[in-house]
Amino acid sequence: MEETMGDRIRVGMDGTLLRRSGGPATYIRNIVRELEEREDVEVVLFDYPGIPRPLREHVLIPSLSVRCDIFHHVKSIASPFFSVPQVVTLHDFIPLDFPGTESFPARIYWKFHIPLALEYAKKIIVPSRWVEKRAVEYGVEREKIRVIYHGVEERFFKGSEMEIRRLFSLPQEFVLYVGTVKPRKNIERLSRVCERLKIPFVVAGRKGYMGEKILNSINAIYLGHVPDIVLPSLYRACTVFVYVSLAEGFGLPVLEAMAAGAPVITSRNSPMEEFSQGACIYVNPEDEEEIEEKLRELLKDAHLRKLLGERGRRIAREFTWKRVGEETVRVYKEVV
Image 1 (cartoon, rainbow, N blue to C red):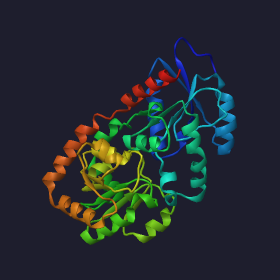
Image 2: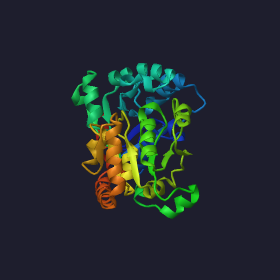
Image 3: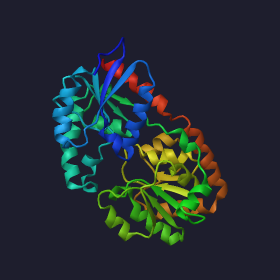
C-alpha cells in the first residue's frame, strides 16, 4: 500500500462482503462506490475469501491494516487486535434479541462479536433510531452513536413490468415479498393471508436459516435469488409489496419497493415505519387478521395503491447513497 497523500483518510474495509448478497453486501457495495468518488478518502479493501473467518477478522486484517488511518467494519463486528481506530456499522441486535430466528453457529458468532463492536468501536453507525435505542439500552453512550439511514440506488426508480412478466411468467396480480427466507420474516403468516384472499404470493430471495422448511410449508411462487438488474422491475410489477417482518434494523426492501412505486404494507413500530414517513400501510406483524384486513382493502382500492406508490417514490428520493457517503465521511473525520 502507498502512503496516504495529503489530507486523504485511508479507510480499511473487509472486501469479502462484496462477494455476497443481502443488506450488508448492498451497504458495502454502495458505500465503497460513493467513497471512491471522493478526493478526501482512500478505500483499502482487504479481500481474502479463502481464509477462515476468525483468522481473517482477528489476525490477518488487523495486522495488515496498520497503515490505514481507520478501519470501518461494515457488518456489526470489531476486534481488540486492531491498532487503528475502528468504526462499526451496527445493522441490528436481532441475533441477541431474537436468537431463535438464527442458526446455532450464527447465534454463537454474534453473541461474541456484537459486544466486541460495542466495546471497541470509536464510533458506531446505525441505520435507524430503532437500532440507536437498542444500543443505548445495551449500555452504549448516545454520543458514540451516529444514525445514518441507508440509501436506495437510482435504478429502483426505473424498470419495465413487461420485461419481468415475460421473464418469470408472473400472474397479472400478485403480492410480493423480497428478502431472505427465514423465520423472523413472517412469510408463513403472510402466505396464509394470501391463500384466504385468493391472491398469488410471490417470494424472491435466497434461503436462509430454516428456509427450505418454510418454503415447503407455504403456497407461493418461489423465484429464488433474483438478479439485481431485474429486481426494480419485479417491485414495479407487483400489485402490493408486503414486508411484515417481526424484527429489522432498517428494512431495505421496503425503501426499494417505495422507489419503484409499489404500494407497501409493512410492520408498525419498526424502522420501516420510521423512515417511510406515512407512505405505507402499517400493521401489527403478529396480528394475522389485521394483515388480512389491510391487504384486502388495498387490493380493492386501485386509487389508494396509486397514491401510496406516488408518495413512496417522493419520500424514497430523499434517501441517496451519496448522502450516506457524505455522512459517513463526517464520522471518519470525527474519529481521525
